[in-house]
Length: 245
Image (cartoon, rainbow, N blue to C red; front, side):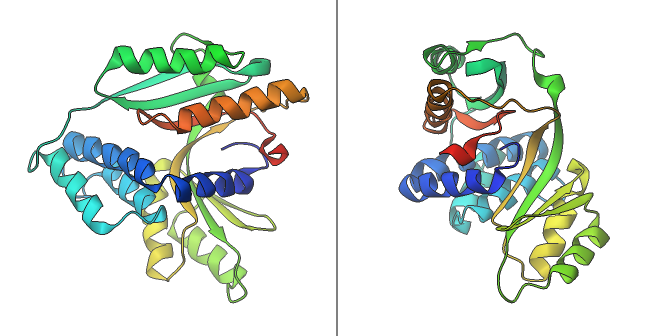
């Protein structure tokens, strides 16, 4: 989610997703339903819904699950009403943390977020305490394959509106302005590229490196606690160190 270890983070998330696919789909369904409720059920007219569907498809969520979530958000099917709440705070070693949630019980979610931070050497802060350290960007990851033409990929992405492309051993990270995220994803999928990950991410301007083994262990435990919480949609931080997993 940050620093130079985005690919190891994706691998870590994929392993968890494979083990807990139902829980991942539940989170994505919430996100889709809220986006549909707030902006309408047509993804071509609702950028937030389009981003949610792209993210769901990158996680291999079945189309019928996606359609059902859209209908729940539009009121065509019964479902709970969720509220978006973002929490900000600090993890071990002063790492900046942003926790995005969708909840039908604010007291429960606030208590869970505070507990995860407190238990692992962090603390909940006030709104805006770390948000200024992050910038919203579209982030699309494509794994390298033997038949992938790097130059063709770069030209396609840039022509579609991508802001930058970074190359790593594992693959390519394409960054966009949030408004260009949908069109770039569409262009890539139209040409048959498989997206390893695709989302509107919070990118940190500065990073914190943890060197203490206990702090690293607590940071990993905190992230796992948030990942396991069905109310938590995303956790962003400025720790660079997932390669130590």
